[in-house]
Length: 243
Ligand SMILES: C[S@@+](CC[C@H](N)C(=O)[O-])C[C@H]1O[C@@H](n2cnc3c(N)ncnc32)[C@H](O)[C@@H]1O
Image 1 (cartoon, rainbow, N blue to C red):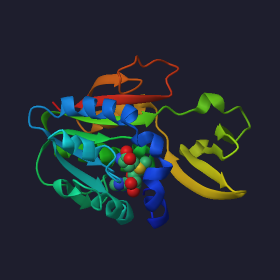
Image 2: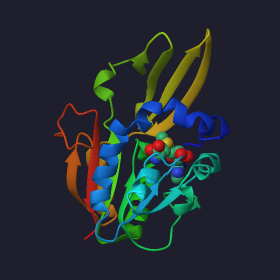
Image 3: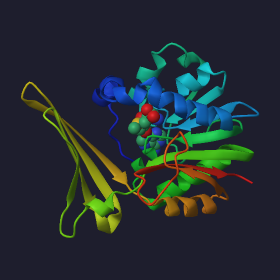
Image 4: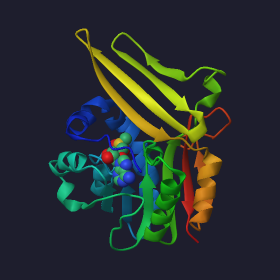
């Protein structure tokens, strides 16, 4: 049960569409944070490695990198990049498939735990992370905090971008803890459309999933620069340790 949206069309324009997320100002603090946790063995595993936005710069720091990725199309884009041959890649499901060996850190960034659309799949993902960690290793997730405070009673949608060339809003299914993100990019009067499906989860729920997988929360920040996590934080970077 996952969001199967990462086909050829999305993959071929992913880096361009998410260009802001590839900026050094975004990537460097993430790599600094994760590279520190990759000590002492310097082995890291990225769940949902995508086109290598984080894994390639991690590898450039001398960290031995592996990745699990569901979309063959995303992997084709990754494999065409310089340095991709240094990565060990498995085309599979991060909630079930495995890579050989033990890792110092396993990580899952850019809200991607939410691509697993059931609680069972999300719990399985935590268990799969724990399975890959050495004792004392860490699992790191970057995820949004559900934006439900912006959803008035009776309303079904919350806009997140309204501009001349872009419109984006989330629609909620509160009963099943799901949301769909609707993205419309307008070029020369025509709209390109992308929808992604997510299962949202509160940080405390992720802590419970970690406990089920035998891991304990060690850090929670609002961002990769370790800003304080508060009740108003829109997202979080959380770290759980395997005993
Ligand atoms: C938002 S992209 C993030 C890619 C990359 N981690 C990054 O930060 O740019 C989400 C990725 O998750 C992958 N994905 C979704 N469900 C997955 C699953 N169950 N197992 C492995 N990868 C999955 C998608 O194919 C896609 O490449």
